[in-house]
Every structure is written in structure tokens, then in C-alpha cells.
Amino acid sequence: MARINEHYQKLQAGYLFPEIARRVREFSAENPKARIIRLGIGDITLPLAPAVVQAIRETAAEMGTEAGVHGYGEDQGYGFLREAVREHDYAARGIDVAADEIFVSDGSKQDSGNIQEIFGSECRLLVTDPVYPVYVDTNVMAGRTGEADDRGRYGGISYLPATEENGFTPDPPDEHADLAYLCSPNNPTGAVASRENLTRWVAWAREHGAVILFDAAYDAFIQDPALPRSIYEIPGADECAIEMRSFSKRAGFTGVRCAYTVVPLKLTGETASGERVPLHGLWARRQATKFNEVPYVMQRAAVAVFTPEGRKQTGEQVTYYMENARRIREGLTASGFTVFAGEHAPYIWMRTPGGISSWDCFDQLLERAHVVGTPGSGFGPSGEGYFRISAFNSRENVEEAIERIGGAFGG
Ligand code: MLT
Figure 1 (tube, rainbow, N blue to C red):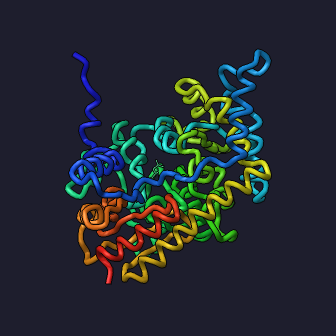
Figure 2 (figure 1 turned 90 degrees about the vertical axis):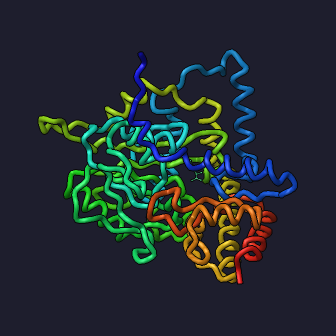
Figure 3 (figure 1 turned 45 degrees about the vertical axis):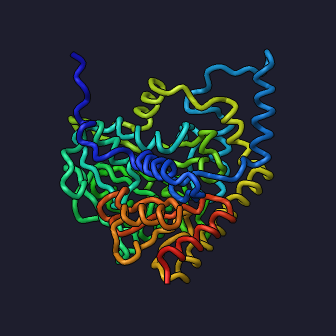
């Protein structure tokens, strides 16, 4: 008899976004005339930048020639892309990351979910709460946690509440952990970690021999150049942190798929006998065994993001979404809502009106305004009473959604 992985039975409900899609489908079936505006999942709506489209066209043509066809890619991704990442995302900001430390992948969701495989099953986990569900669920699947309690918190994970009081960017705790997931700009709260906050996290990780898994998928949305975009801006982070970044949101690649993870050569973990082992080699081994590289065409598309035209065009896309975020923030505030963030991230984090639950807010917004958002409680217990609104949509839809939400609840 094929026994199942029973750790899957511990998972609470379905994955958040399919559950939202299910409720929306049900509502649409019952209300076929309702024009629904989707500000739920953070999925891009603008067309691909012309520089990216041109690269895809040219590379597809190249692949149709004997001289230009490419089969399996290079381990860790093509050198041309890793070199461009090194130069533009790191060296240009004075950060020393080598091309060899970069692993090209097909998404930060995958990388942030898979990275736990290279760590021992007994590692103690720390997450901020609310949290991107992938970090938690993948560790549950791997058997690194106990059962969930009645608030949905799994045994074996320390949850660090991200609250209004701490500006949604908690400082490290006094307690010990081995692995800490941090995300800045944060999904879902849209809060961004300050240099001081990250400095305290790096000091904590070094003191505890912990590894920080730093998800910077939204770094391009940071508007203030003084704020850190990479954890490697903090001295010592290359000895305690892995960083993940993505082309998904910054360049409209959610349907194209390209991202990367940096595993510094200096970064080590410990064996049971106390020997230090480089994590870079473990991740390289894991990827070589389970992953066959992002298609050549898409790596060429990604490198086009770094050309002068690509930077200008994708920069304009980010500006467009951030203008949406500004309008949502200001529009909802004017309608009497208490909203946070949306200044350095494409997400607005809003207190639910009248203190209703996050899922009640979801249902009421759908029914009364035909607008879809994301219930904060879907990201963890400390998200209860909050609601996430995404700025990824057309200006017209965003304007209309602000009006409809105000009309449905405001005043
Ligand atoms: C979100 O809406 O939280 C994200 O789009 C999910 C993701 O990037 O996987």
C-alpha cells in the first residue's frame, strides 16, 4: 500500500489563492452580470516591456537555427544573466556578490519553498506573522513542524507578530531559531525593513548561528534609495543569509518565469558532528538533481530587463503600479479606512472596517462591491482583522474599485 506523506494532513485549509479563486468562481456563477475587479493575488496586468518581447522574438528565431539552438542550459543559469544580475542588482549598489553565487531559477515561490530541503529536519523555524504561506506550508510538508493549534500556528515554528505597534517590521526575538524567513518589502503587509532593523537581524543570526532566508521579490518597488534593497547591504550578511529575488513583479514575468537566489560562498551550516559545510554546494547539488534550468529564451528575456530600454520600460511599469498604490492608499484613507504601506510595495494593508473578520471582509467586499482582495488571516493569525489590496491592475479598475469599496463600506 502506498502510504501518503501524512505531514500533508496537517496543512490548514487549501492554499490561500486557490481558495480565493474558488469563492470568486462560486460568486460569479451565482452573479453572472457582476463585473468583478481583482485586487487579490499580486499578478501583473501590464503587457511585457517591448525590450523583453523583442528579446523573446529574437531568441525564438535563434532557436530555430542550427547554429542557435540551445538544449539543456548551464548549471546555475547562463553566465550572461548571472553576470548582468551581479553588475546591475549588486555591484551598482556597491554590494559584493559574485556571479558564481547566483542561481537562476523559475521563481522565488519555488526557491523559498525548496530551500528548506538543504537544512536538517530538526531546525527550529522563525517566521514573522502574517507571512507568505509558502514558507510555512513547505516546512509542514517536509515534516519540520508539529500539528496546528486552534489559531493555525504549527508546533515547531516561532511566530513573531508583525503589528501596527512595531510598524509591521518586528525586531529579532530573544529566543533561538536556526532558520528565519524575512521578506522585505513584505508580502503581505507591504512594510519595508529599515537598515537598522536588518542590522539587528544580521547580528541576531550571527549570534545564534542561524540562517536568514531573505525574500526580496519586491525590491524594485522601494522608492526611497536610502532603504536597503538587499540584505547584503548589511555587513556580515554574507555569512548568515540567503537572498531570493524575482523578475516576476519588477518586469511582469509572472507568466514568463525567471528569478534567482544568492547563496554566498562563505555561508555555512553545521553537521551533527560540528563540521562547517558550505550551503552553496548543497544548493548546487539540490538544483542539479531536481531542476533543469530556466529556458534559454526566458533567460535572454530576463537579461533584456537590464538593457537601457529594458530598465526604462520596466521602471515605468513599477511607477505605474506604485501610482495605483498611492491612489488606493489615499482614496481609502479619504473614505475613512485605516490603511498602511503601499509606499514601497505594491500592496496596501488595511484594517477591516468595523473590526470584522478578514474573511467576512472578503465576502462582503465581493458581494457589495464586486471587488476581490486577500484576507489578512490567510497569511497567519496576526493577519486577522486586516485585508490586503494589490495595486496590480489597470488605473481604470483601481479607480473604480476605490469608489466601490468606499461606497460599500466608507463614510
Ligand atoms: C501574492 O499575491 O501574494 C503573490 O502573487 C503570490 C506569489 O507571488 O506567489
